[in-house]
Image 1 (cartoon, rainbow, N blue to C red):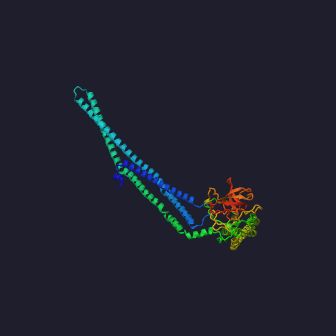
Image 2 (image 1 turned 45 degrees about the vertical axis):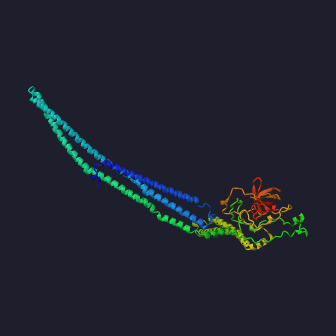
Length: 566
């Protein structure tokens, strides 16, 4: 159905309709713009979410649990999913929104051209009609003037008093007006014929052609809208296969969670390599007591003899059972101590793993240096055989540097292998050492440190050293670091679990130790873990470690594992 034949007289309405078409295109383009903005914002928020929860630690510090690894896999899949949302936004930007904006501009220009042609045709028809109307009015006016001149002529011709000249003059005026009326009639007829011809052309040729162009333009607009609707859906449908793979990856990550494997990893991570403590022998403290035959009273031993019989101060408070690791420090602030190069601050099993890991890494670096040395030697041989390719002497500094690096790495490997052999040797003889420790140390069964580790160092339960000679200092305190310690730090001060009195002065030169004067009273905030050090706090609030053998300790009755040291 053609607009030119059916609605030939609706030019103004077609003007309004095509303007509505432009407005609809722009409205739809605005919808697409807001839609792709939502996609871009969604993708950005997803990426920020993934970045927020992605691990920020090094690979060595990352947990190896399957639940954690699966969660990181889910994060990676979610990051890929966010990328697909960005692809959707990009597709909509270029193939829908951009196309709509370009077509809207072309549509406006084409509409303006067709409407201008229609207005020009209408103006030309109006001009023809005005010329015809003017000639018609002129013809009507001339006819009226001719009628008046005829009446005047007839009146004078019948008047006997009129002169001949007046009659002749009226006759001539009558003939003139009649002639002018005939000319106006001919002009009016010509203009009318011309207007009728132009009007036929206007409504049968010009207007149908213009309306046909407007109709084609509007139909193309409708087709373009349908194409953009399809492109809008295609942008979403193209990413569905990849989005499905992302979701499948998340499902696979969920299936990869293995509780048994995680339990094994926990054991491997926290296993210290120590044997469980053996049974404690019964200690008969009544062997030095004597009873009278009548009243059963106990005769006291002289103080001098008791002092003589008291155990001597321990010279080396360290004990293999004291090297515990992997405490979570849930209820107290962990002691900050630097990790040692030989990992001697770790339990045997963990120390062996760390040393073996370092030896493997050094072996890989050594292999790289060996490969580099071989490559340089081959290049040197090529240069010696073909001097035009390069100077072999120029490679000598690099070869020397590589050889030096190899020697350093070999030295490091040898040093770590020595430490590893020492650890493995200690582990093989741990059973004998444990048997010996059971015969010489007597620790109350079930005594537990505030962090949950056990200690078999019992010198704290015996009499404090006498003030005669200064006992040897234990090694530097090495509180055990743990990979999760930072997550359980607590800024609240540790509670006081006892107090002590300094038997000797201590300079506290090592980091983490506390200076104390002779007879100074300190608060106990952490028991000796078996390494010969006790954590104490001064009245001023300063905290640090002091040698256990340098102090006389009294534990609070209501503290956990409290024992009074006399």
